[in-house]
Image (cartoon, rainbow, N blue to C red):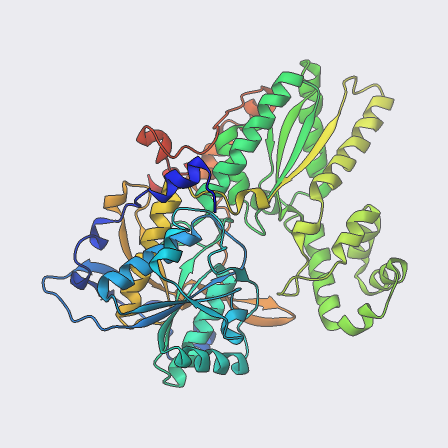
Length: 551
């Protein structure tokens, strides 16, 4: 196998650890701190998780004396979409495990949670681990989106773990994967299986965070990757001076990616879904706001610009949110009947009859291609797959139509040449930034400490990450602490509450402070490619969001 020069150089990078995780591993322990409660729905969740609810917050600490360390086997699984740094989580877990006891084994489940159910495993050794250190992707063991939800699946998980003498299962995933992990932890504890379940917070979307989980891994690298591309397009737009670029950015629900990229690149327009919902802006309102900026720039001789659009925008527009909610419910309750309708025309007619009057009107006014995308197969939670909805094209069509009307009325004399982009997969498997390389390695190393302590139903957590690495602190957060109840497939289910953009938070306020000026002037910022070597302020820089939140 041949490697690129950068790949070879990254193999040699030694991730930094917080001071609490450095030194002799038998002198690293835990300190429980008080009890916890869920984000909401406390009574119901305490009934659903009677054995793990209310567990204390955990602080990882240095011990005065060495402790006995047992030889244990740990299973690890990658769940859901890729995020830069996953390999370093596994590397940190492996290094800590072997440092504690060379005879301990790390068992990787292949292809995600399905690998547990199908007993597809690989024992991870040093030779294998060394091929993936500091690299992007999840290809070391692969990932998958199989949900662990039923008692039958849980029983198989228990049998497979016992077959390999696994005493702890580490699930590296997002909010849904860690929610399922918490349910599995509760089930194992009820059965006294002796198997603990721990999680690691992964998602480039940045919405798996709270007071104790400051950032999910992959966000830093993904936003820097997207920002490089946006900066390149800004430079092109500033050179050609004839295109309006509409760029949709990955982010299933929250607009954290869009906000961070806006802070890094200073586009003319960046739509923040949470603000649009808060201000009750309709689709027409959004289009008119954009048209006003386009016209003003044109009057100044600038018939070009940059628009950033969060992937989940359409679900935050009030009339679209109501329509999508009704569609999700209809298609969940009438799956069999809907699947019997073989043509789009038949589906559309049935949908329009079943929707409320207002939603039927909204659906009817949408372009045909958007209607079709709204009726596509649902995601595993029964919701519309927003990544398939070409929101950027919908906005372009509506803006173009409005500008044509204005041109006919003599109110717009400029030109409008749109270009559409969707940045998604480009950011999910990049070489992790130094921050994500260090952060993920620390998360994995700390996950071993929690596992060795016999904890279950926790997420590995590294705090104080806006500071230098040696000042980071570590611990564990009970998954139930992050939960509330939400409707899925027509039923109320426990899930980790997504952290949306805080309109009162420093990142949004920093963004909104100068956006009116940047809307009209071309004040673009060009962050360039991720740097791995050089001055600390360049190669170890945190995301602007994390810097502002850490102040």
